[in-house]
Amino acid sequence: MQITSSSPAETEAVAGRLARLLRPGDVVTVSGELGSGKTTFVRGACRALGVTQPVTSPTFTVGHRYDGVAHLDLYRFAGVTAAEWGDLEPYFDGTIAFVEWPEAGEDALPAPRVRVRLRHIDEQRRMIELESPEPTLLQELS
Amino acid sequence: MILGIETSCDETAAAIVTRAGEIGSNVVASQAELHAEFGGVVPEIASRRHLELVLPVVRRALDDAGTSLDEVELVAVTRGPGLVGALLVGVSAAKALAWSRRLPLAPVDHLDGHVASLYLEPHPFEPPFVCLLASGGHTSLLDVRSHSSTRVLGRTLDDAVGEAFDKGARLLGLGYPGGAAIDALAREGDPGAFEFPVARVPGLDFSFSGVKTSLLYAVRKLSAEELDRRRADLAASYQRALVRALVERTEAAAELIGAERVAVVGGVAANSELRASLPWARAAPLPLCTDNAAMIASAARWVEALPYPRYLALDAYASAA
Image (cartoon, each protein chain N blue to C red):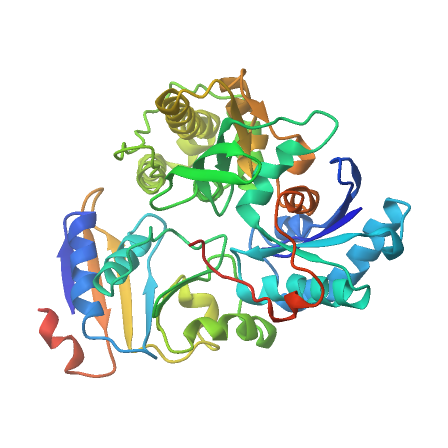
């Protein structure tokens, strides 16, 4: 499914609608190049899930944990070794987990329930692509 | 003597600091060289690395200070925020060392640690002051009223400024660490060549996500040849935009609370343009800007230490409250 967003607020709103379909244990990967709105997307989802604190980029800190929600970022990873998975695993335990830059962890992470891809259309607009192995899950979003 | 231990992110660090704030030793097993080799990507971000390094680093800190565990009266450790597995290595090592000698243990917040880098000898800077904390993972403005009372005035709503430097360097095809690479290249460029507007958010908060995207578009508009020619101008203009945002908000914070003194701490405090733009502010000494354990031991001097053995159940915390 593809949705065009013309502002960060719209990107947050799409993420919020998606978040309401999720349950603890779900993993959502959020990919896209620099500045495409990945953290914005996760912020929208976190807000819909009741997170009130600032939702900031975890590029350097790797993981942020909020009540029932985890926000991870594998930007600085080259791959995910068994030892690294040991560090990441607690973030997935009982949470809805959003993973930015998931490419490095593709073989190690739990299978995502939803894959989100963000693309630049122009300076303002983004194409949000959502994909799920469950054919019915995303129907409510359109 | 206070033994400080820090393992919240990439650095495994230990230090010896006296109660008076003199640094006996400050050992950091940095992965920076490894990062450079791998283009900024960490070869392995795992607590296993901290585990391999923590005891050798503690031993080295004791040796460098010419002391031993017999002289240590207090063990201080970063409790959070950070990567939980990484923090737990430091916390467990600190607990074990303190427990084996029946010493008290002081759990320290990493961000309080950065502020406490200012309290160390030989030129301590004492509260009250407004503090800009700017690093790869954090960007905040703090009202530091006393050694043990700090209030957050503003913080980044998206990216930390150190991350903006690092990702900007990546967009410009520069090396790692990105902040230092931009700082060096900016000296050869014209800071007025490009306009990179930094979003103005209400209050004293920061937003650095949009300026990174502006740089992306500026880079995209140039051919490879033009990019080569204009790279220094881009770096200078981008750095100017980031530093201006920091300086404006810092000055606004100082004015708002009527603070006469300002300090800058964290990895970005090493940036030469930021230091030059706040000439009247106190910047943390260069070796204490990036993560280290001397600042943790320093902060511990104003933390209520847990007596033996009450800290055995102490846990780490991942996120700032």
